[in-house]
Image 1 (cartoon, rainbow, N blue to C red):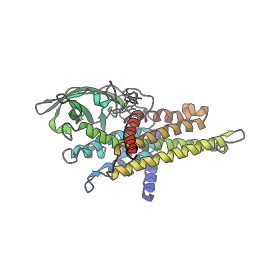
Image 2 (cartoon, helix red, strand yellow):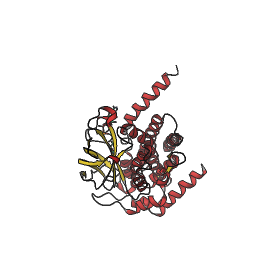
Image 3 (cartoon, rainbow, N blue to C red):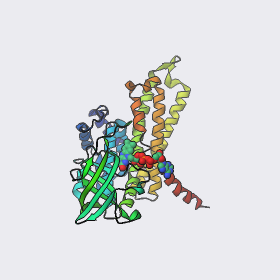
Image 4 (cartoon, rainbow, N blue to C red):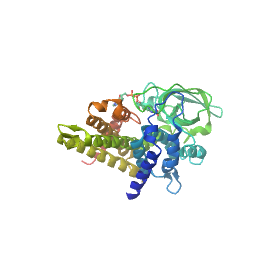
Length: 382
Ligand SMILES: Cc1cc2nc3c(=O)[nH]c(=O)nc-3n(C[C@H](O)[C@H](O)[C@H](O)COP(=O)(O)OP(=O)(O)OC[C@H]3O[C@@H](n4cnc5c(N)ncnc54)[C@H](O)[C@@H]3O)c2cc1C
């Protein structure tokens, strides 16, 4: 516990020294690189080392510590933390697929952040019903020919590697799903212009198209037909991270609200002395702590290769993102009208946090997953 505290403190101090909280506010301009300071910070802080393979344990190294890193970077800067969450998906995929030797170079390029990566699953016809995707991979001499269209792909604007979920054209059902790793330069891979968004405006999200893109056989990550199982496992690993990052941002929003409430005088006394606002802040504090405990539990469960990962990780994501959304909303209220003006920066938290219940599996979809598992569990005890 104490070690975690020191780690968090060091990350926070490094980010503050490097002024990440200011640099990360730069809005992304189509085709432009992101500020290099953000990558330098992520490299120098060593956050991705938490996800480096642990040869002895045969697993991803330290997910609990990675969640602390996401919380701390999320508290500093919403752009850096989205580089992290997106990059983690292909890193997890290669390790969960047992590709630490065959695709070793690519894995270490991602862990060292020498190369950036993105994850291409969502299609214009729908993200939630991912099993209905239409990106196809036809077997051809020496490899595969891939066609399809993906959308809302974060980091695609600058990524070097593209992890793609497609279906083998001649295999029905889940057995056809296969994950592929493509290089940006691959002929037939096209990244369309950035799609403007409500929040998370420091990071590009783009449509990506594959036109008769040839990939050699060794770019099928984990082999043919394992794509669905792998993606579900990757998502079990990334979902608590979305909760952790959102809670980091929510903590900063609370710090700002509390600081504002010390000095803003209403009815002759500081806001923080008002019983109604005190009650509200107590609720925010409890919601934050309860959600973090679920995120922490999910990290411990993943590190221990524990049971019920789907349900435990989904609950962590739902709890973390929904607590964060409500906390940011209430923190903005502390500022009254000033919270709504861009000058206090609170409206940016509000826009940024809004996407967290939507991606990585919408919370509606995750509630369905949790309910399916827990109803069986509970009914089984009667
Ligand atoms: C900022 C941002 C970044 C993203 N980054 C990526 C990325 O890097 N890679 C990637 O592949 N995708 C990415 N996405 C896409 C994201 O994963 C999808 O938006 C998400 O999965 C929802 O899919 P959809 O938008 O097609 O909504 P739909 O699937 O059309 O769903 C619409 C609404 O209906 C609800 N719904 C649908 N079906 C059900 C059901 N059975 N039960 C209950 N409710 C249901 C959903 O919860 C949602 O509220 C990103 C999205 C955003 C906004």
